Image (cartoon, rainbow, N blue to C red; front, side, top):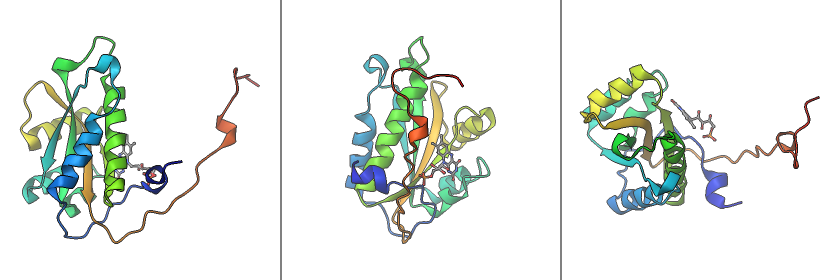
Length: 170
Ligand SMILES: Cc1cc2nc3c(=O)[nH]c(=O)nc-3n(C[C@H](O)[C@H](O)[C@H](O)COP(=O)(O)O)c2cc1C
């Protein structure tokens, strides 16, 4: 298994150290390198480093408080103009978000995925905080920063969740 997969954990405390611009770009490159349905690439990103907006984002739902501790937060958005009829954009953005988290880990940074979509109330609060146009839908908020916390690897492999060829109902 890749080390970044093992080492990625949700870390919710950060130091004051800023995240270098070149690292943010590498992370966004990884996010945009993800597979997507018919190569639709239905994603957009907002880099948030304004303290007032970080504070506002930390209040969009009760498990978002860590966002105000981070030097930056990347908002992952879906671009409705690129959504396909089959409605696969959520899967596309999931793949992109995981790439983003893994590259953050690769850059020696701590991160945490904060859920936004599909909760309407949360979606609307993020839309207001980021002044989004109608065609952009907030999907997730990813706080990123340096941390003194160590990423602890926990082995989650469970052979009972794996079948070969067919699954028999007992
Ligand atoms: C779709 C999704 C939504 C999540 N939402 C939140 C959230 O709102 N707040 C939070 O602190 N963590 C959130 N997490 C992080 C999970 O709690 C975390 O991934 C899980 O507990 C496993 O821990 P690990 O990431 O350290 O491996 C979310 C993760 C996913 C994939």
